[in-house]
Length: 336
Image 1 (spheres, rainbow, N blue to C red):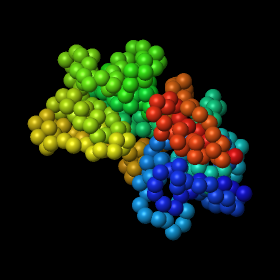
Image 2 (image 1 turned 90 degrees about the vertical axis):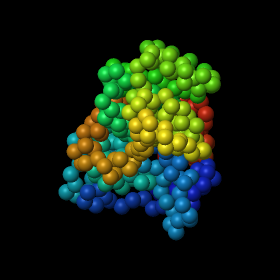
Image 3 (image 1 turned 120 degrees about the horizontal axis):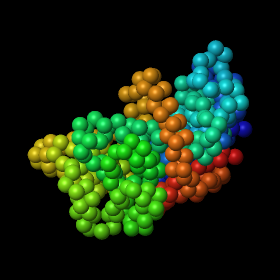
């Protein structure tokens, strides 16, 4: 029997998610690939979507969008990406219902996994690297970034934050990392000794950022938190600067007076990797960015930390761990 994670309403994921049994999938049709999953990631974004789900669903809603596994069958006449073959390892993204033992996915969502990558890295190969690619593209749209302007990112100790730091170091882009605690700052400094890290644990942290940049403009800021922290970032930005929000961790809204945006000509932009991948990226762009995601996984493998690995029967523990403060790395689930 196949086992799949589903929910029928929104709410705290630990309370609304359940594992159901269903018949094993039939052979894939044209344009489909049958994958036996070996691991899937529990991303905070997955959990936010579940919590915000409106109303009650008439049928169970499958959870998750990314998983890694082995190809068991390919539908007749199906064109697949290079390296995708029966018996080969793949990662599936963006597939609604990826949290399952078996996935019947559209062929264009299936990407071959390089032999050098473990399942633990392969399970994280798409969402987080693609988010880093999306954010870097946003930063590069600012004329000053990479020449005179600095990038400041919050939640720098997160899985995405560490990849952004790794990408910026590789391309020699000026960056200041911001974390919530002195303990988190110490951990990040040990990993990236050449990157300045500032902790918001102290009230004067914005002054410390200004000291670090030494009079150069803060052109771009990345923030997955929102609320008061985002307001502080808007204050840090130089005239013409851009704040890119890509998460919604804070409960309170971002409160900003129109004069702040107008007088400094600031841009406040929201980005979501799922919406961007589905509605904005062309087939050529998706193929190119998937290749870039692979290169990030191969080149920065040591940044793909795993916080813990759970079995499918331990789903509640996995979900609770995924949002635990101070967590380093991504929570994985083995679907057996």
